[in-house]
Amino acid sequence: MGGMLAIFVFALTLLAAVLVSELANRSVLSTAVMFLVAGFIAGHGVLGLYALKADDTIVASFAELALFSVLFTDGMRVSTRDLLAAWHLPGRALLFGLPLTLLITAALAHWLVGLPWPLAFLLGAALSPTDPVFAAAIVGREEVPGRLRQLLNIESGLNDGLALPIVIALLARVGAPQEFHLEAMLSELTLGIGIGVVVPWVAIVMERSPFFKAHRIYEPLHAFAMGLLILSLSWMLRGNEFLAAFSGGVAVATLGPSVRDSFHPFGERLTELLKLAALLVFGSLISPGMLEVIPPRGYLFTLLALVVARPVALALALLGSGLARREWVAAAWFGPKGFASVFFGLLILQSGAPRAEELFRLIALVITASILAHSSTDVPIAHWLQKEEPDP
Image (cartoon, rainbow, N blue to C red; front, side, top):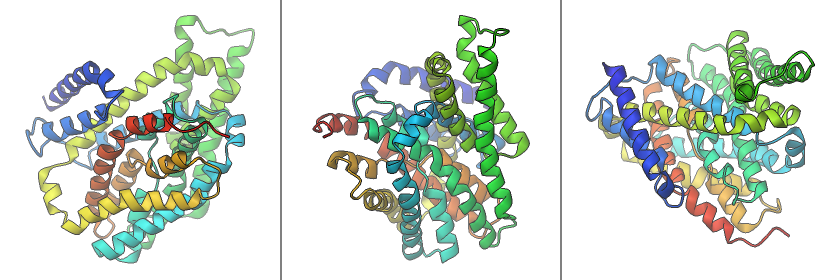
């Protein structure tokens, strides 16, 4: 019965979101926030229509599927040529912005919340990646300057894969029963990229041979089948599925632009549905009781993690990059936290690390605040950027 009620709540919220979607597309109203709030109200914390726990398999599965789907479709926005041409900006964000965000977040966690340094760094690592699910709100808007869209797209596509080994290493450092082997982690990352590249290459070469041809009705399913193969192979062979998803999308864009174009409308809708379902599930985990347990310093930490850590880190990383002032400000602000951090938070919670529940509550609070803040500011930011002077 609980499962059917969850489907009913999702369907009802989806209908409401469809009816107000045109208004949401040109205002601060956010359909993402609607699903988050619906999950909060329907979950065990308020109405109790169904009960979900953070360690339930469905929670991690939805977070992982939503993240994979967005990374795969976002990867299709850039070919290898685009990636190489635009690499200097994402390179700054990944090589300088990510570590700086981690350090500033860790310092805030240590001084404000009172976490020991190892746990503070673990929290910083879990919150340092930006989320492609919510970055897509800016990345998908044609009115946003192309180099800013590419910066946010590539950064959000790669930084969760870079943060994962840091999280695993820090879990081992704080005493969680979690083994860390550098060679195994590097193998996982490399294998993920390899799977992401090889599967589209084989599938596209086969489709171009004289023996095979996709019918028009099945053309959108070509890339969909590749995505499922990449996901399942990554799980079975223990490759990093997130890097596999993004590199797979880039490979499709590079090797088969027509395949990408056929998949695009279907892929965008599928990704949006997974994102909204995952938001409903995540909202169901939040309860008034969980929010009451967090001390005032935890709320201050959340505020500063959003308005200081990422903005300051990326602003410093992009100094002298040649970005126009408004693009620079928008890039610094738009670093939403989301399902990558949910995934890391669940990893911490299930690891048996010291104070794991406290860390998860803080991660959940930051993600919730980020969804509310960033999902409500994407449209105003896009309109603000339209007023910018053309690139020199």
